[in-house]
Image 1 (spheres, rainbow, N blue to C red):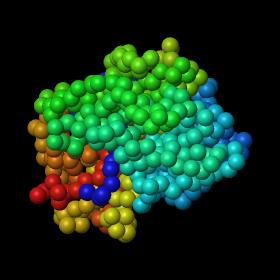
Image 2 (image 1 turned 135 degrees about the vertical axis):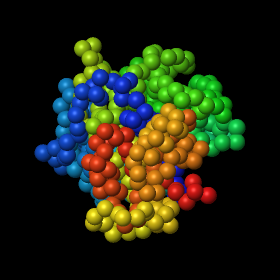
Image 3 (image 1 turned 90 degrees about the horizontal axis):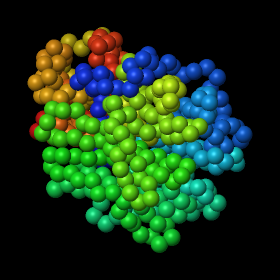
Image 4 (image 1 turned 90 degrees about the vertical axis):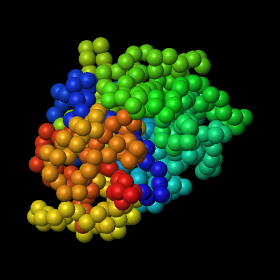
Length: 434
């Protein structure tokens, strides 16, 4: 694989496994994510984007700002082309999001004083504003960086000693942040155990907040922490077993006054996006397109706010670093290939992943039904960055001269029943073949 870290926020990606039956009702009822809506705006100094008014998300190549009443405005990305992901806003301070480009990523910051781009030190994820107006983000999932707009100073915060990774920082006070810390399990490097830790910027000390457990079979990961107005931290816990065919469980937890407890089980795959007008907003996968949909939770049920992603990663667009590693794309190949893909050309590139499946036999049955040369069945051990523990998937390498987006679109047209469970993923076919 390319020498960079991938955070797969979507633990489950398969419609064929039956996940859709347990998805929130809004995900099943909403049909499609349209193309770029009309009225794409430029973010001026008084715009919601520059003022940080509302919930910020990204959809393809646009910044989405959602108001308390659910009104939706979309703004042009002002920088060089890239893969937009992970957005954060704060009233009166502005909006920030990651522009994932080939090489070190860029943080785009929109403020009333104008647009500023911050050159990153590597792969950037999960920007977060402090109550005092500073901005933080994760670097290579191995440290947190804090930037002061007032002075321009940048401070690098290392993870707790012995940690395997760190991501998703959020601030509970101007000088205290909470982050998800990845902890080692045995001799593996998989993301199998996460806990919440608190860091004090004044004393430069870490404190553990939760003590979840995991082993080589049982895994427990945390995602999408969100700070409520009272300082409570809500987060999603996903857990499962590698040795079973059962789907992982999704749970909503809260950390309040130093104690964490489960609030409720969740009906399926969903991640916290933020709080809007006092109500929780979720990111759920749209079964008809595979893109992320924003859903507002309320007493009268769930309300769709359209497509967009806050702290979850794009799943229909390839990472620019992978495209750079594969070399310059020459565009789609006309006509259907008569032979299988040259695996030497797909060895360190991208693939279509179709899954997840709860059993190896189910994945193999689909693989045989597809009749696509070069397709193979893989499990978590073969492709840990693409397949969740205890699951299997079918991967189809994308030839180097084929546009990944075109390959995905063509497959979804040929097999519409699998459209919601098919994605572009980074995949090293040569590594699995050895």
